[in-house]
Length: 300
Ligand code: MG
Image (cartoon, rainbow, N blue to C red; front, top):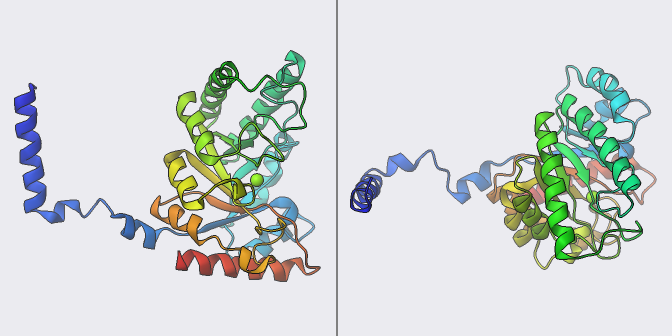
């Protein structure tokens, strides 16, 4: 098609759309997406009341929680147990929280090899459980010796993430980069920076997440999530002063700016509790926290 024909066809198409606004019905406007996007909440295993998985899942179901986030450590040996406990329930495995040994930006090849082996074992189990992905931090401040914070290291990280992402895809899941804050992991602090690494890793198996606690580094929750767009695969939530239950830090615990972005993006995955609890009555505090988040989601 030459340029003239292309222009003619495009203009004719545009004119047809103007003449027949009904043709746009299938393309929801941001407002339509916003109002219809449901909030999918998830609990990490450790913070859920109950001794057994069955007790934990009973409690989650009583609150309408549909996501379960276990740790990655020992996950391969638990696939059967978790599958059986989930049978017949309206709960799915959300993301898997880390649990590997070593780290991807280790200078020592033996420590890097530890990461490669244990991470792939967790990714395989995550795929078997239908998980949205395995969360990872490239390097914590305390992990030494690490590769220097240079352009070459970023290129290396993108290449390594590409390989890992392709492996995750072959297992039916993803790997999820988690930015932290400068006190914990100077290397990766902003959601948009993690999203840019996803883009440059060039694998659909490489995703990122935002954690409302660590997002104190961001200037805008809304902008952070919007910048991540389609790369956003998971969200963590906690109170915003002391990393306890949402609501336990009072008025500080406002999530509507970030929730507004998630609704506009029609974010399909989970918002998962990763936090402590100040109160002795964990069940009551979790119940109140879930109410608070649902209220703020409606308001956003
Ligand atoms: Mg987190």
